Image (tube, rainbow, N blue to C red; front, side, top):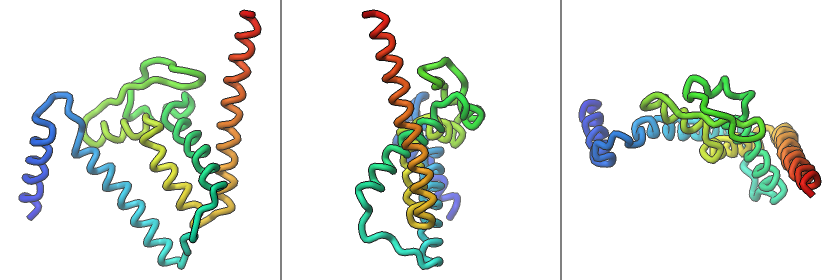
Length: 174
């Protein structure tokens, strides 16, 4: 059964990629998606086992707070220079790309490459971060709101710092 499944998977990948040398790491993506699904399934099972109830509705304030916190946490993990050691096994440094942000090239093949893409892309990471914050609202809502508020505050500070720099440059030119 396993051999037949492996052959079928290889055939699907071959048909999808057409043998292109720059084809995406489909198997690595499948492993990454499987990991995400396993985590979400495990969280759902844990919630059920603990008798945690899902909210009937999510307040718009939690959605807004979660959106800002997800943005900041994803960006921090994917681009911040201080978090580069987390990405180093999967990426190669290229150059600074902004205020305390780094441009990095994904390296490796298969799962290593797909993990590199995931952890160096704030858009890709956002799904995982938002899932974590949503799970936090089920298991520990007060702590999750505090953590989200902290990162939302950092995001607000970032925008103010950048706005200050723009205003300062404009005044100096002006």
